[in-house]
Amino acid sequence: MIFKSLSSASEFAKSSGMLNSLAQIQRLKKEKNAVILAHFYEDGDIQDVADHVGDSYFLAKKGQEVESQLILLAGVVFMAESVKILNPQKKVLVPDLGAGCSLVSGAPYEKYLAWRLAHPEAICATYINSSAEVKAISDVIVTSSNAAKIVAAIPKDRPILFGPDQHLGRWLSQKLQRPMTMWPGACEVHVLFDAKRLAALIELHPDAVVIAHPECDQLVLQFAHVVGSTSRLLEEVEKNPAKKFIVATETGIFHQMKKNRPDAELIQAPVEDGTCGCNNCPYMKMNTLDKVVKALGSEKPEVTIPEKLRKLAQVSLDRMMAITNDQKVEWPERFISPTL
Ligand code: 13P
Ligand code: SF4
Image (cartoon, helix red, strand yellow):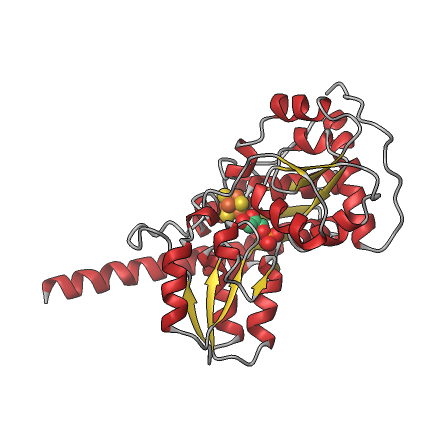
């Protein structure tokens, strides 16, 4: 009895704290004419307070288009950097500057540069999950929603370097029948989905549609009926009349899936250790409503990029935007290392 009232008292405190944060965010947004962009992997309360929620391509595009002077990006830092690179006049805030990504930390600039220098004749296609420095020495950026279109636009006679996600790269290479030299990086969250346990789950639910993000290992992807970006997976759940889906991507996406298909059963694909909760991205989950309030109030932490670096990184992002929007692009003949 005592436990029950204690837990309901703490739940009450938590929900009134949350209501307070939501009210403050609405006030600050109005006062400062700020726009909040959020990724699908954020907690549901952050997604609900955002003006726009989407995948990494959508967030970069929205960030390029918005008119407000102040943008808060609730996602991981490379997403906010992409907005700053494309729209440098805006002040871009994040709830937590520590929100990294294992693909970014697994592709340090010096090593990526050495890799490029070893293949100067190749076109280097780099996943948006990368640092601004790595973008600055890449020819074109891709996201999981436009990667196939972008790689298909690279002239057939040019070798391709693809990094830093080897699983996305392998999936693309097989899909497009295009050989690529792969950087050996991976997403620490998506590689945890377990193919053996997934096969057993599919046996239990033969009527389920299996959907997976291309950052998963190929042993997992081989079971997927649909492989795609977070927005593509969401679209599948929305439009496919099936009543059951097994979902191999980060848990935050369930928030929109449940909203769009309250009638469907959504089953998380299994990881090896079912008790670890490790299909949560620890970086995305560093962001909280409290940090959003603080960031909007103090206009900190702000994402800043030295102008020379920003301009260099913009070249590869601009090429991505152009190809995605069906425009023709020029490719450099060979790689010449810039001085950052
Ligand atoms: P999307 O572009 O599909 O949203 O993916 C971003 C990401 O970090 C996946 O782990
Ligand atoms: Fe990076 Fe993986 Fe987190 Fe996406 S889910 S932000 S790829 S660590």
